[in-house]
Image (tube, rainbow, N blue to C red; front, side, top):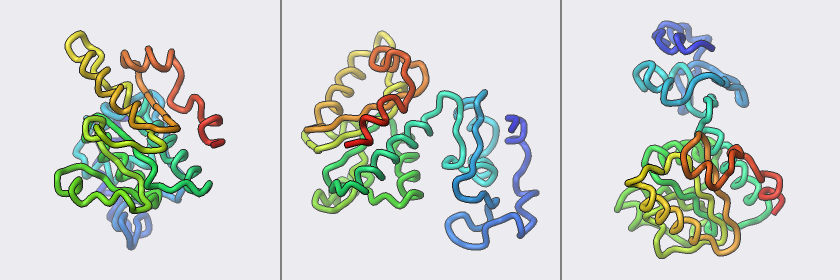
Length: 218
């Protein structure tokens, strides 16, 4: 797929009912059989996002069906795979948290888990934080900052590569990352994509799926 395709108006294609979903959350959007998708190995998600309006991009190529260069979607894939494995092994999801730094990361994470049918509570605002049920069999999604004072048996920290590693923000990012890492009582999984400073320090060039076999075996 060439990036210029994103500039075409997908509504032209969606006028053909035979090419669209007839019901459900993707009603009116182009049919893409489950498990199919597109790998855009030469562009980043941000470049694709800049190519056109969000509603047009979502119709043309939903986030959960695309993997981009150095992409955060790979981290979501790995995190979701860990959660599914743990769930299959009988782990109580109330003992699991996934932590992130930016709202946009949490939004994409929540959408991904919703698509995969993984029970979760996204603590994205004060109302949802107050309504949080720590006894519910669901994964807690929250920012690194919001995780202060909480502990979980298993913690996944995503988006490390997007932490500010500049001269001014490095110390604050390091403190936040430390908070997130110390929320885990037994198992800690950390993912990163891109070439951010914290990715280089913690991953030494490894990709987001490094250690998957070891982690998923538990």
